[in-house]
Length: 449
Image 1 (cartoon, rainbow, N blue to C red):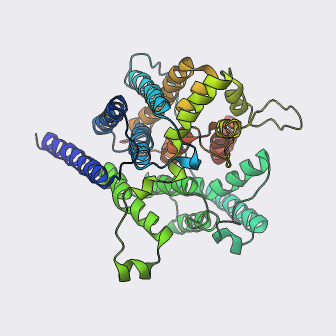
Image 2: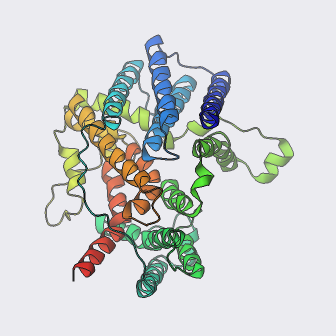
Image 3: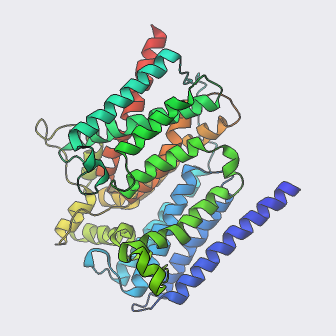
């Protein structure tokens, strides 16, 4: 009874905080464009479904929750603020016609996603022996050496001072240059996660080994230099590994997300414009609306533009997903890859800047229309469901499995993959997890021998 009461109180507080935030935003809006009644209702429905889905998720944290936070932030809060205040990402104005069409696509995605994620009857779980991650002393030493080598490679290629400068910390180049850049940066982070989880499970892992790995991770993945999505992937993943599960009991994870949304986002936005002296001396107020008036939140408007693109240029019939599947094939050998969806749409529409996002439902729509949206939503929901279930099934088992490492880092990647464009996002996704794949394969071979 007490547990149920706490859950009810937690859910009530979560809803109350979100309602207050919506009220603050609504009162702060300087409306310059009138949304139609249908569009307003669409946004309200998407918001309500997203909030209910977050609250009804019984897991402390999950990929499913990240999916719904994306929908709430990128497909409701951000576009609502943008369209009401007359802001258009990349200075490309979208009409009410396409805003409404985009919302219908989003609602279709939501319906299919809900049906698939909550349908447990069609999951066929094969009884396979799960592979544990057991780190003996020799293996620990090898992984430490590999981490140090990867750190030195990045330092040698980039330069130590450049690692902390935003414009110079990233290696430029083609597909393989980008992929290996993320591969080397991920090695100490993944090893740190494995060492932390192994130590928690009772394995003999020295604390100073973990400190070395975390230090290597910070040096080549500086939060000040690299893009926010990559920083989110690395440090959200490590935080979920480091902190004990009780830190996330109940709805605490959701409260942390809301703190980031309500406080940290506006503060970070504030210091983009003003110095600390300006804030303290003039009393500059936090701008909860300005946070969303930026190109980082262009997902909804790009979905509108994708729908417009399809109407004028027809479907790509698998051309975009083909580029994702064959990302590893060099163009010099076989030129079958196109350009990322966002870039394709922006170029055709004559935008001055073409390196834009493309939300996942837009990727499905540009290739196969409504059928693509249905297909992508079902596949995405199925994958997230399988990972969430596999991770939380291990909660009370004092052993370390690969899913214990995959899910924490996937938390950030869900947002990145959903925002898109899928081709560059998937390339970075594979670059990050390539090391874990190689490690798993090599360990399986050693066990068989």
